[in-house]
Length: 195
Image: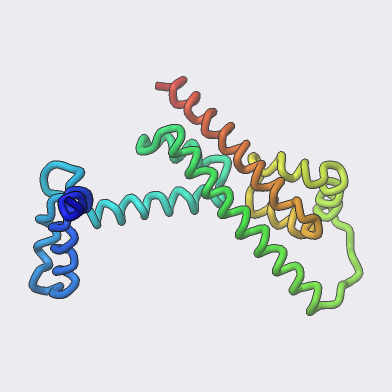
């Protein structure tokens, strides 16, 4: 009974043929094209399909991590993913970008502070704008503009001025979830509006 359960659940013939391919790649290279996947009908190349899907997901997640404002619309308009899948891709990409740029920026700013003497500051218009932004809005303001701003820029500015606050990363990650929902819902509405 146990063997029949495993055979029906995992389809041992498929697994054995794939292991056989690993042992003799030159002789059995044609066999993988003829493997029948238990969840589909007909012949399919399951490995290639899975790698193709993984490549698409990787692209969409990396796209979301740097271009967060446009990524949910791009992902949804391609027609391959529904609302919830697009939402999860947006959250995963946004979190990846936030974690990489926030902690990467914190590491770089700490390293610079340890290895270089601070120079006398010259206040330019850009510096004044950043200081005004920091003083006027704080961590909450940075989290609010994260959705419409650029993840790398907002996270680097936040890492520069708010890295000593342990709640900063939680503000940013929560902001990503809220903005992902808003931007994905707007994408669905926009597609339904134009179609």
